[in-house]
Image (cartoon, each protein chain N blue to C red):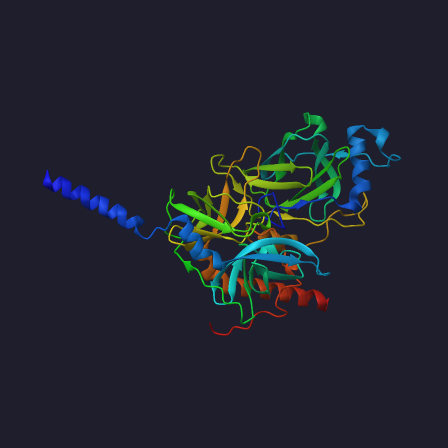
Length: 229
Length: 225
């Protein structure tokens, strides 16, 4: 009997440990919100074009979805009426991952912690923070609903019940410890779909420099070839 | 997608909003097929030729479907698959109660080009075409999806119905702006190279040109990071 009680206590302790570092949503918000920014894009005439979100993943560097920047001539990172000009640095249009940089020294937004997105669980609680419809710093929560994998069992998308809306793109999907697990990217809008939202695994960040270089090289060489004709 | 670019179609699948250069031609074509002569300009001296499914040699099967649409959609292939010349009508929504539903055969192991053109009263017409390489004895499904804003075409390999796969060889075709009925509809492309190139999903729905104004002017130098 005592042994059974001991085992029960141990199990309980283990379960508690799993949640030990979990933060309450308000604590999470305080932790991650300085690192999530509104992206505003502009056309060639400097007129507003669209908006999205971006997350600071290194000093002066943010990750967003490339489609947030599509057709733009320039863009800014905005928070609480402070705006910084952004520069596109690395591009992976196939995976919709774009790295942007802010050169301004005054941009001192804190860097988020990243987690290993290959070790996620269905049912895990998550929060998303972004700027849906340009509504700055909107926090929502949900579960990891499904882990979408390809034929090689590689993670392709994190499906979540945490709601996304237009403008959420490029925002962060975080675990309950405030670690970035994915970048919010798309929603299913098929008739009858409800709350089917997809984020890109943050581990894709590791491949970004090489994939960006390959895609830019191909683009520039094709452009040179075209110009030579 | 959540923001600026919103390709509702599967990744790397051609979709196209109206092609104004094609508008007049499409209206004529669809008018002829649909018999709605009242709204069309003068008849054009073109009689649609129906597609003749091959029955010898290596073959693949093509199932054709669309969502329910209010207007008229026409689904065709071509005599010359590489440049989309010589339209061969396979089916139309009119023939199947506003929803494409047909089955045909394609020559396997060579390029097959498919064209979907759609017009509805009050809507801009839209055109979308693709080329892919069917394989012998495989079963394919091509689905034409129409919404108020766009139409899209995608081919899936459904040889294993429980595991349908987006056909990896398919690529979207660009229409020749000045095309006539007697000329090629598709901009010439190195079809063999395109078919051989593994299709990568494009989650952004963008082309690199869509970021042209923002891209670094030259490939990033390898700084040894």
